[in-house]
Every structure is written in C-alpha cells, then in structure tokens.
Amino acid sequence: DAGVIQSPRHEVTEMGQEVTLRCKPISGHNSLFWYRQTMMRGLELLIYFNNNVPIDDSGMPEDRFSAKMPNASFSTLKIQPSEPRDSAVYFCASSLSQKTEQYFGPGTRLTVT
Amino acid sequence: GESVGLHLPTLSVQEGDNSIINCAYSNSASDYFIWYKQESGKGPQFIIDIRSNMDKRQGQRVTVLLNKTVKHLSLQIAATQPGDSAVYFCAEFNQGGKLIFGQGTELSVKP
Image 1 (cartoon, chains in turn green, orange):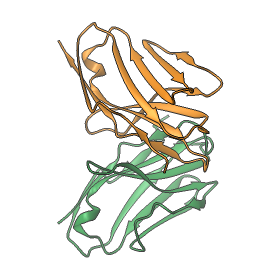
Image 2 (cartoon, rainbow over the protein chains, first blue to last red; image 1 turned 90 degrees about the horizontal axis):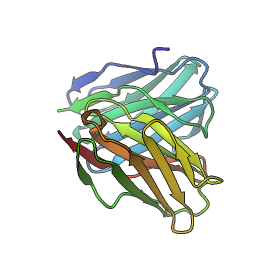
Image 3 (cartoon, rainbow over the protein chains, first blue to last red; image 1 turned 45 degrees about the vertical axis):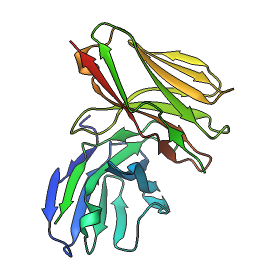
Image 4 (cartoon, helix red, strand yellow; image 1 turned 30 degrees about the horizontal axis):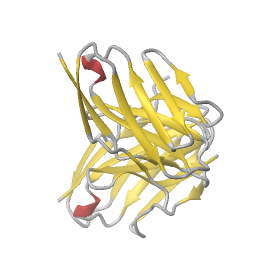
C-alpha cells in the first residue's frame, strides 16, 4: 500500500491567493482527517469525515477554510483567500474507522508570503 | 478543558541506553491512547497503542505503560538507536472521538 498521499508537498503562494491541498487516503479506510501543525500550536485537528461525510469541522479556523470529500479516495482542503498566518504544515490522515489508529501522509508545507 | 501534555520537551540519551518518554493526560474518561513518532520533514508515524483495559503493552523494542490512577502514560524504548531520534507524541481519544495530541518530546540519541 502506498499509504496516505498528499499533494503538493510544498506550496508557496502570495497573500490573497487560493490554495488547494489534496489527499488520497489509504484504500479501504472510512475516516479521513485534516490537521495543521505549527510550532506554536502543535498538531490541531481541522475537520474529519466518516464515509465521505463531514462530521466535525469545529477546528476549521474560519470561513476562509473549506474541505470536501467527493468520494472515498479523494479529499481537498481549500483556503481562500490565504493569509500569512495560514503558513503551516497540513497533514491528512486516514483510519479504518473514527476511533482507530490514524495513518498520516507526508504533509504539505504551505508558505503564504 | 481537555489536554494531553508532555513536561519535558527534550530528551537526550546515549545510543544503546533505554529511553523513557512521559505523558500526562487530563481526561479520566479517555479509553484509548496512541504514541506517534515524527521524524523531521515527515508525518507522524504510528508506534503503538493501548486501551484503558490494559496497563502495559509491548511492541518491538517499545513498551507503553498506562497508569489510570494518576493519568499517566509512558513510552519506553529499549536499546535506543540513532534512528530513534525524532519527536514523540502521545495522543488520546476524547469523549467526542477526536484524537488530541500532546505537545511532543524531542528525543536526541548521541552516538
């Protein structure tokens, strides 16, 4: 198995631009999670899906952030418009079900200038 | 509020020694805990987990101990190797089913 796949691995963009991060979970996993990691705040859960349905988006910082999961093998996290404070590493993780071990992708390092 | 925290942000050990990384959690109702290892530039990697009906679980060179009385978790790494150098996170599932991560401990292995 290839594990969780994320793209791009690095993204540098200017303030105000739209950013789309992509994730392919492990085949057969029914739960998908988006996290953000910064030095100041550590690993924070942004949103998670069970069977492609968003369950809890209370961690999404504000309306500029949105996430979709159109099918079991693909999810996106979009930031529009992006701001410098959004600079962080964004991880996608998947698990067989909500309360089982989660497997993380390699992350997308986002820099907003 | 709920929190999972590590008191020692850094730990330095000699190669071949045993390492012990500690973690305190605040929610006495938590029933499932996971340890993750994160190497520089990579995502967190699952190491070992433990449920609250156990107080000890062993893997390959790693042991997790759970003390529910004092809400304490530890990760023991036997015969620490340079490849063990990383940041280690404990994480607990809260009552809402979310995985809450601690701040992490950086383990540095000296050759």
